[in-house]
Image (cartoon, rainbow, N blue to C red):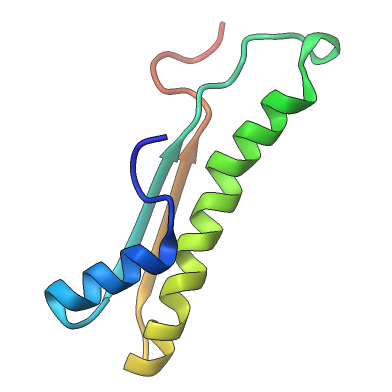
Length: 88
């Protein structure tokens, strides 16, 4: 996947460049497989959970300590399983 893989690296880079962290926006997308429930594979579910739940969690976990130390911060989490058009 493109983007941030390591929340701690993101935090360090941001603090080095800007000196503080006021907001984190996690806008993740992972294409949903167009399959019926009985045809879906567990691995596809794991990939989606990693992209849409675990990755934003790591990012926000890394930011939480900075937010606490600064007296606050904001987190915006957006996710989608459709990167183009909705399923029919």
